Length: 244
Image (cartoon, rainbow, N blue to C red; front, top):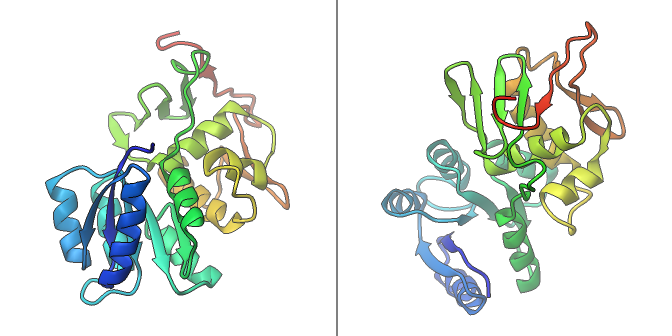
């Protein structure tokens, strides 16, 4: 049985009931909200693991709600929408969503997307205490904490997993498909727009000049590469243990 607390946000009561019944049958704890405002109140009241968020709602729209949720917490967010264009998906991901599911969808598809949104890259004994230093940015993989000097940098869980996977494969190109399957799951591979959005977000947070990245580099037609050895021979290393 699965575990996790999920908030369903949709103004269609029948759809909420159907999804809720399915999720409860699969071991999830479920709450419901009809509007973005109600969803934000419920998220303030108690912790949730994932939000299923409809884009088309009265009052506060889905995109605005997504931005407000992402600004306030690191809960996983899956957008549900009848829209299916790349532009719509990119807007949702830019707003802070982890995934995007087009309506109508099947029960197995929705459950697979939920599992993918909730999955986290494992921290093995070999990498659990490692620290990555990129200029003035320090990444503690064990604590899942990123700092720039005294300032804490807030990464979403998917952003952190993406950075962690690149750090585990430094100084070599990682293909799009491998990145997607490592971070989102085996059912992914063609959602290159996901990577574009998340890499852009990561660069804004950890690169000195996001428009001219020094660390997270694009490998045209292939994927992305985390550069630890710079052209001036400065080396940014992953240390084996804290303080080493």
